[in-house]
Image 1 (tube, rainbow, N blue to C red):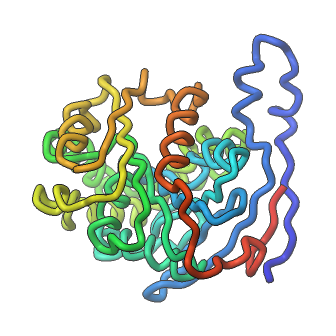
Image 2 (cartoon, rainbow, N blue to C red):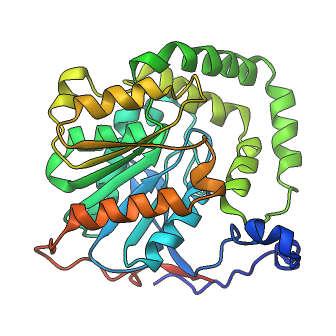
Length: 317
């Protein structure tokens, strides 16, 4: 049993009482959650559990970000009766940060997601994520289709996006390699940036804390491993899927979201108003996700009891 840990809203966020700042205040993490760690391939992985119950959604984050970017969504879905598990992938957040590229292949990340289900004794769950996490969800459905009840895929990266992603990530990889002293100094200074209590904002600030060798390993892993399931593999994914895309981003082009929806037998497409809608004005998309998950789980019940959300976890909040 992990120790009990209490967290509080940062003082700056808690003092924002003026009416015009109400939308900002609403983004501050507010719901208690629990956390735990487990090990796969000698890599320690960290996760958070929001809510309880048999209807489980596992969410993963974008590249060089962490689970905090999904905390608001997890909290809102927990209020609707879902149990949401946020996983920090290797090289991210509070998980170990191996400095070799093979640990950061997309298919390796998918194995870690399935290992998390085994760790929590979850028979079947919905799997989702944003950008990198979206592709990890797809790979998980290919790796273990019987464990995936549904998919929530936000901003997937498929063939149309590969040139744009290469234009961004390859120079970034070269930068963290050849400008390592600068990146290392930025990482040290970034550790002094105070938490705001706004999960998505803190997650983005966390990208600055990566040591150059850690960031390089993650970026290299993305380039050497499979980025997305093959065309044939995508057509074979039968799990109900909610695809979320938007039109203002060449790394996550709307064409990829649209093509994926057409390729998956049981998919529906929702257009986001912007890349930040689910993080800054989440009500509409959260409602779409909750309604989709309610339909996907239906009257489903697990065949074996799931681990109590209190077992082996530290409590926060």
